[in-house]
Amino acid sequence: MRKREFFIVILIILIGVLYNAYEEGEVDIFMLNHCSMNPKRIRDKGHPVNFPQEVLNFASAQTLDINNMAGEIKITPSSDGNLVIKPVIIVFHKNKKEAKRISRSIKLKSSQTNGKVEIFAGKKRSYPYKRARVNFNIQLPKGTSLGLYTRYGDIEITGASSPVYLNCRHGNITARRLDGPLKVHHRFGNAHIEDISQPLEINSQNSEMIIRDISSLKMHSSYTTIAITGVENETRFDYIAYSELDLKNSGKTIIEGRQTKMKLANISGGLTLKNSHNSVELRNIRGKLSMTTRNCKINMAEINANDLFLSNNHGRVNMEDISASQLETQIAHGDLDLSFIDIPGEINIINNNSDIMISYPQTVNPSYNIELKYGKIINKTGNKLTETTDQYMTRASKAGGTPMVLITNQYGDIILRNFTQKPKQTNVEPEEFENN
Image (cartoon, helix red, strand yellow):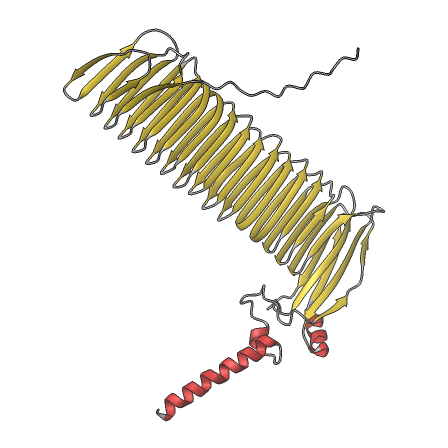
């Protein structure tokens, strides 16, 4: 081995040993201490040194804004109507003398102007993210609006009754029992939000969210896993992409999606949905239903809609236990399996390159008007059709009852069949025995 190569190997080994010692907290490297690379990984996490700061007390605060570079913020209701802020600087270091030096480099600034209280925790320049955190324990008076920002740290708030804005870049959010409107910006972490009586607005990215028992929701999200249960009024996703959505028990719902896996159940106020390149599962939807999708696999069951419109390209559609005033589907390059219970109006199916299977109860006697090119009609029902064939075109019709079924299809077969409708189960309370 040449001397130069030997020197390079020795240098790499020394750098590795030095960096390992730095990671173990045995040595300090000034350049790395102030570097924000991987700041969530706190150095010497097992050696916290606490530096409690002066308690701040404000008697007439209408608004509180906190900008915290790194650290936890915990909000609880005030018992005496005063705004009380208890900050603690925590430095993670084996050397207490060095920890004290770092703590002095962190600045806490507070000001109050016309009822607005502003708190800043950080440094003008490189913040020691790997070493320090500033934690706040705050008692918030009723009626004081709140704005919180933290770059690295968790936020927990309980029992506020005024407008709240939370901005958390790297960390977890917990918000419970809020009587005022809540607005959230969140990235890279978990969020648990529940019991919000006023409108909730969320902008999220790379998050995992659990949302329960809220008044209404307006959301913009990407790369997020979302579980929502219980929206009293409207749920609106102006944009959701590359995410997973599980929504249960909502009023009117509007979703503008892209490449998002969706599972929705118990929607009572109607649904307007757009999506692409993922699956959509719907169960127990009430009200007007309109879906425009592409490259999606669609599964729908227990639908009772005023009007039902579905457009999908390149994906199979299964529709089971469907009731609606009228139904329209526009499907290309994907099969349609439709099983309907009650549609008194019109069924209009326009398909291309699709097989169509339609099932309905034996008691239903629909009318038909079918135009099929490059395919065949397989009729397994008791309703006879009048068919004519002209080269590649087959026309079939039947006059009579409802619904009126209009089908235009090419490059696919049409299968018609009956099923015996099962009676719905009802819970019957046992009769009480009479005493003789």
